[in-house]
Image 1: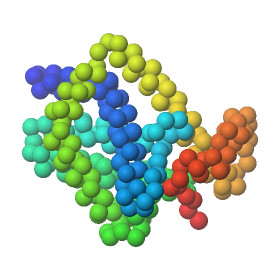
Image 2 (image 1 turned 45 degrees about the horizontal axis):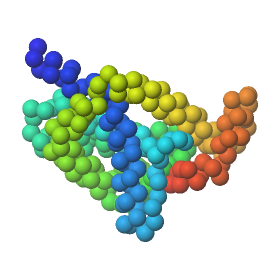
Image 3 (image 1 turned 135 degrees about the vertical axis):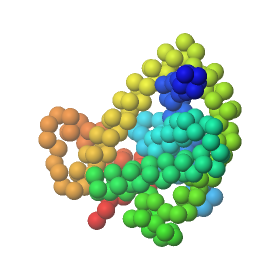
Length: 216
């Protein structure tokens, strides 16, 4: 019973939400710095119409915490490998969803060694492994910070932000869907689609999602 009680205390909605937010924002910052170093320009790789959020990094942070918690008594190497696999599968799922679902791509590893459809590659799999190792090293400190964000007052903030983010991401998904549909020749039918087309035209979407492109 004790291990279950320990897990129940460590994995809570509030913790996972704050992790999602931190991972989403921190991921955008890291990619921006990476582009600044490699390309000499700052690029904001967001996946939300409002706010600097990248949901893949947010989901990765959440799954990394869950994996590290469930495997807390295992070796750090095993935990790092699991997190590496989680991030790679998450990236694979996201890439396939974009490519096969709406005919788009948001990144391209086609010119990198041992890649699959340009969606995942060996180099970045190693990067995710290194990130997982660092996450495991900092796990206890991260958990302590998250515990401090689980008070009653902050829980209200957490719920309010959760609703806001859920609406933001739902509208973002609809706007991206219409962006793709317009490109592939689908006319807007109905009030909702017309409204989306009016407020999220192609030029605005391309300026917001700078790395996204269509598969021809």
